[in-house]
Length: 79
Length: 163
Image (cartoon, rainbow over all chains, first blue to last red; front, top):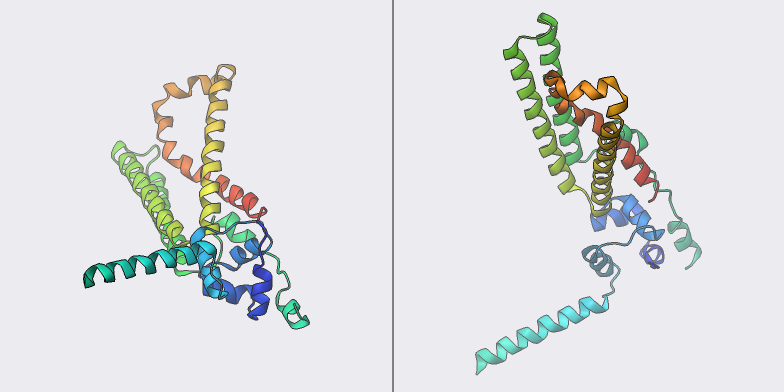
């Protein structure tokens, strides 16, 4: 799967090792994702998105659901 | 991407540790989990090997009681190594774990195919034909683990070429 991990890493001035430390994976894993030889799992993809300051559509969708659930619980408590 | 970014973003080679993979079946990261797995497995295997050398050099063929203790120790050793391997695998990151599990799966298939071929070739070989009727040879079964470990290491090496 195509990805922009190398570009994002460069924008944050991180080496593969630095990024691997932050993501708690091995450097080889970061390398395999960058070279598009390996597709990360969903949790790792979310971690990458969080680190790069971006949110995947699914993540924003999940947050929206959580927020809407929170507001419905609050409004139920008020009534 | 500017020039500075391009320098940072240079693609590094994956550099999988070939020696550690082929010799220990691990990734040579020297992480606490890996060190624990390698050290404890090696120490446990060394203790059992030492016991076997001492027991078998004293009296060969060994006395039935010694043979039973040796086989029991081998069973305990293999169970312990398997437990340590499980603990090591659970500490790996997702790509490394995937490779290890894939290597184990391929090792299982390799062992299965080898066993199947031994069965197919049995009628053509006097030794193979009579092997099942020699109960003493069945005691060698626990040691198949040590035969399959190098196979797992080779599969790990082969799989690492993919990433």
